[in-house]
Length: 100
Image (cartoon, rainbow, N blue to C red; front, top):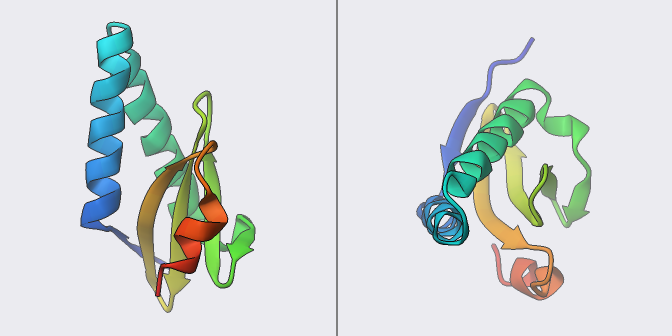
């Protein structure tokens, strides 16, 4: 089994934190639940990064269960880089077209 190193971009890290805070503003512990689901999605990506579909060019996506968000990541060699967290309502293709 290949071991991968997970890297979360500063942008994705900030998006995850801000989204969790936003959910906590709506309901106590909802932000915590969101973080648990993000953690589960990251664990799933680490276990089988190539299992999730290529969404745009070489970028892959993993849905965050129970929440309308996706994690966009890329796999290069033994590295997994999470680039952004996107809400389903965003223009995902436009945003991804700006990524290198």
